Image (tube, rainbow, N blue to C red; front, side, top):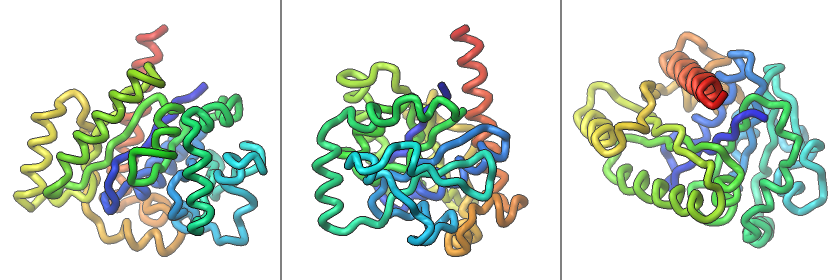
Length: 261
């Protein structure tokens, strides 16, 4: 069985979904069989990967509702090593249904079962909350990537997710670990970005990724084109950064496997 990684922080606008998409694509580019699962009710992953509503034959809500099997909602992408389970943009009624279904904390890990065994990596794009589906994902995951935009309230949000991971580890999933804190939208020329990154390194020296994702207008533009930035422009600074992030994770996974063996 491969590694299950949740991309989580209880704050929007930090590049969480873009990170989940581009990291998944980067892992696939490294010939790692990867499954990206959208758990965010905004359903942004589908459009960012070029899927229209008509392309979606089933989503994660169908699985959680026991209307479809986990396997039947796996969609192929234009990268042969990247598969995808979407989440449609939910109505108010569907969001209420999702909230009710996710009150059973282990429902996601129970439904995933053996279907994820064929993948090297499973990446979850979580909603910007701590309760509900995010808790479901953390119970099912091996590790967590925390994307952080270097801004005023970022440190508070990192502290909140760290506390929640500790709660999950103590009560539901003792194997879960922090994969790393990832600085996103990093502007190398600004004092505030430098200060936030420095403070993160002081507070969490053992959890910081070596890679930071630079602020790059092409990343936002790529979502409108329905393709990851790596696919559109592999030479872009953000593309190279996501490829470096993937290599960090692959190397860490290999090291831990050797160490465990």
